Length: 214
Image 1 (cartoon, rainbow, N blue to C red):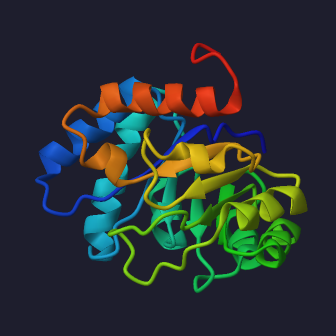
Image 2: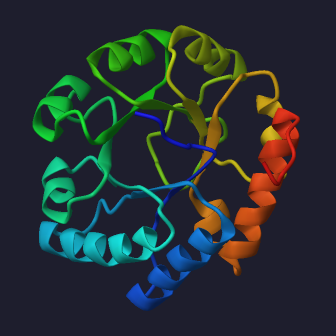
């Protein structure tokens, strides 16, 4: 499945009202994010599903795919575009059996071996990291640019870097071959996510030697 992972937003609704959260999502969409993953670790299934449906209404207006973190049941109930699974979640192969061929399935990988396994099981893209320390995941394991480069070279699907990334620290990824970047705090904590998304896109395109308008 062809997907654009250039600017991938992973949400964090902590310490926000629902209205503020949804407004940030809308603003980030206006700024040009290309993929959105709804990650709600602390919510009940009912709350998670309710929020997923509200977020889906927003992203649909911008033709941005909605992925659900971990929860295949929520993805099915909300008719999301797919899921993202980590190394401790349901295997990609089982997620693919449940969701079928028409949905997007992303997987986290910290090694080339993990990436190859995810690809062989049917993953559409890989999230590789963490590049930098991050406050959104307490048990994160950092990997080096050379690790990310090895992952990119090991699989024929898009590989995105994730972990503490912002528009001022992407240079470390210049020779890795990544297809895009995943961000959390850089947009969720930005006063104006739309403007920050534009800046992130521009920074990434400069990294890749491309025009920001492409």
